[in-house]
Amino acid sequence: MSSAFALYRLPYANRYVKVEGSTQEIPSCALLNGCSGFVIAPFQVKQDQPIVMIVPEQVEELELSVQSGQPGTSGQSGKSGQSGSYFNYHIDFSSFHAQLCQGTFRKIVLARCADEVVSSAEEPETLFLRACLLYPRMFIALVYTPQSGMWLTATPEILLDGDGSRWRTIALAGTMKLEGDQLQGEGETLCWSTKNIEEQRIVATYIAECLERFTDDFVEEGPRTVRAANLVHLRSDFTFSLPDNHHLGDLLMALHPTPAVCGLPKREAFDFIVRNEHTPRRYYSGFMGPLNMNDATHLYVSLRCMNIDGETYHLYAGGGLLKDSVEEQEWLETEAKMQTMRELLVHNS
Image (cartoon, rainbow, N blue to C red; front, side, top):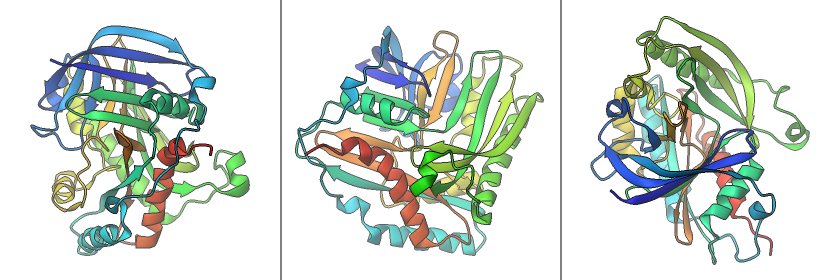
């Protein structure tokens, strides 16, 4: 049992919540049944990388301050480390794409990590508040536990959200970058490629099949274009009821990791990713958020995130690969996704 904290802000909210408490390690998603607290879960649950539940001892709701999130002047953004090198990505892309061409996978997600070093680190809470101001559409969270370390995320992807009577999840896949005049809108004029449409359909079909195991009362709407920072994605929404709310852990076990961060077939793609990606994902592409706190659950997939380690920031991003994926385009997509976190590190000189 150790001290830990989480700050989180729901999309479009003008207040954020601070949770402080002790931690409890959870060996699997299924064992979250009946639990209550703030959860941070990794992509791969291991003994040294557990699901961690912050058991609330103090919870307070706070107003967002515009001033506290403004960029500072104390340092300069640094350069990317070797973990972000194109060479490593090229090796990974080649091995992943070969499996797609052989028909082993219908889709597989390739992720990478890049290190940003600053000369003078800012307080993590300042970065959290800045993210709240820059990204009003996203779920923003800053989480520290002794087991996971410090993580900051600005993510658009709901894993499970509800108040006990009605639940929702989403299928989010496909990515395009907004540029020029497109930044004034929500991406409504963009035309999606066949690759992006197929990728999103794979995720939506998988989620529908998962939900069918738990309920016969669900509705799918979409896909539609949604904006997240300077990117847009294709999103389908699922709303559903459950016969009871005592088996949320079992549902999370089925949903996580979704094909949006893993691939299909799911187990085979997961095993290949764990064995072959250059950099372990750790808590990137896991999930986090309050579970059964005040009769509400808001769990989000940990995308657009970074691990804060002193003056070094480990940035993570990934993208879904299909057979017709092009390496340079996929690399540029991860660069665009990492920019969400890099924007927080840009200081005025």
